Amino acid sequence: MVYRLISSRQAGGPPPVPPRSPEYMAENQAPRLLAVEGTLFALAMITVLMRFYVRIFMLKTFGWDDWMMVISASLNISCLGLFVKLTHLGLGLHAEAFPLGNILLFFRYIYFYSILIISAYSFIKLSIGFFLLRLADRTKWRSFLIFMLVFIAMFTIGSTFAIIFQCQPVRAGWDYQLRPPTGTAKCYAPDIFKNVGVFNSSINIATDLVFALIPIPMVWKLQINMQTRIGLAIILSLGLFASAVAIYKTPMQYNFFKETDWSGRGSWYYIWQQVEMHVGIIAACLPTLKPLFSNFFGSLRTFTKGRTSRTTGSGISAPFKSSGYVKHADDQSNGSFAMKNLSDGSQSRSRDPYDEDAVLGKDPLYRAETGRGRHGRGRSDAGESDESILSHDGPNTRRSLPRGMAIVKTTEVSIHR
Image 1 (cartoon, rainbow, N blue to C red):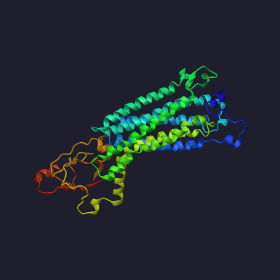
Image 2: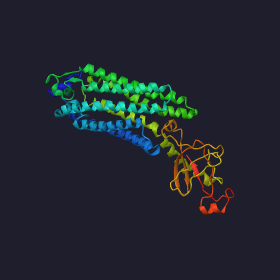
Image 3: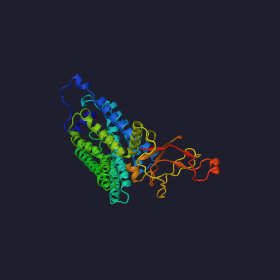
Image 4: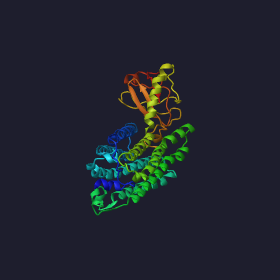
């Protein structure tokens, strides 16, 4: 009875009467589904962890966009667990081979899986929206982005309610025994459920396109060279890949109830839901990794080219052009260099790790290497020096020599990207 109930939701009706071959009955798509899902899940989680590393250890800050990504990653892990459970229950097997005893439990998991994956999509967009909102500070885009964030929040609530309250009583949403002909629950007709799903997918596609295209005019007005401008626009527009996946998935969703083999050939619809989520997470995290990549490639250039100060007599390393800097006392262990341009008298200021330069990676990290170790520093607004001329460090030196008469100590410093 339950099997006929599930099959009746599909346009084709019950499975064909002629018996299938043993090979057909034994065919299972689950290993391929899990291979695709596992690979994309690993890539998505790697980018999330790299993002958190940049924000916590490099920039030492954690904003609303990062908290939205924490929730997205948590929902992603939950969806993975439910997806694996669905394959254990029979997802990937042909409809004729689906274990009858697992059907009720299967659709119960599908009910909660649908709620979680819709929420995951929305929190990914909220993360992107808060990220762009930080870039749009004091620009005409700020009000529009706030409107989009509010719209996505309200749309998520509406979409979730549409799934939760698809039946009266609500329990019939996951308990198919309460539905006709075995029960008296009233639920959406398949056509209504399909149209609501397609409408939600269309809104998701539209919001993906908005968040993918808005960065282009925002970046285009930045005071940077054309090459950097194009690169940033491309990085921030990676959401177009998520839009492409959603566009590809929508026809499959529209025709899902026409598929008689809902657990076999139809199982690929579920994997494309997962693909859309993973691609969205990767696209949302990659723009935040620029400081990490800049640091990595800077270290790689240093390794391949060697330190400039060891290959040239003066130790000058471009692009530094100022005449010197003032240094904290050497007896301060683990101290950092306080840069000051001696030519114009300007002072260094503390760097906001979450301003536009840090977010876009326009303010690359430099490293100052001395005999005592490496100190990661953000570039000073005042400029940096070619070499260090230190005044009298030790107490004995200060008593014996007048200021400015001699160089008491020199420290070789190599500053590089």
